[in-house]
Amino acid sequence: MFAMGDRVVYPLHGGAIIKDIEAHIQDGETVKYYILQMLFDNMTVSVPVENAEKLGLRYIGDDETLAIIQNTLHEVPDVQTVKAISWNRRFQLYMQKIKSGSVAEVARIFKILTILERRKKISVGERRLLHSTKQILQSEIMLIKDVDAEKAGNWLERCCN
Image (cartoon, rainbow, N blue to C red; front, side, top):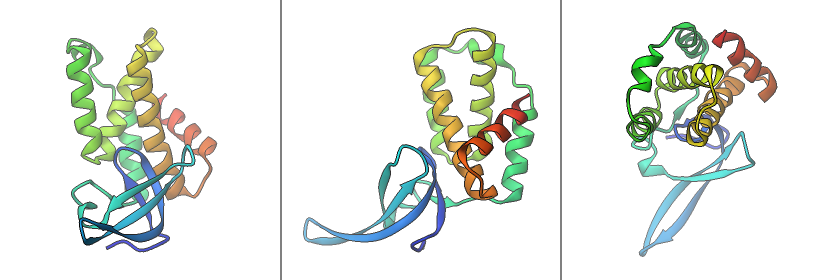
């Protein structure tokens, strides 16, 4: 179980700090929620305590996580094979991988979309997904390295080159 002040990662939104644990009454039952303060957009997310593991809530990574991100971003993915898949199917696959909570998968998606964007203009949906994956990675890097968004973003950019 997590505690207030813990630094965590919520797969769909990235790094967060548990600001509170609240109890709410639902259908006559008491349900506890982690209140997550996300690092971007001044957003809070409520996650039911009993579903936290199923939803992929986890503690932030460490130096090994940074190495995984860095190594993944240094790989050269087969972008042609990716482009051969229809956008709808690619989006479904990307979302499935993001929901898995795997930092390597998120980094791989970020790298693919970054390459595609550098080659030519990408669609609005792909641009949104690129922005989301960058924020997910950036926020975890911010918490691991204890740096601000700009420094985390610069680190990501250096790894992609």
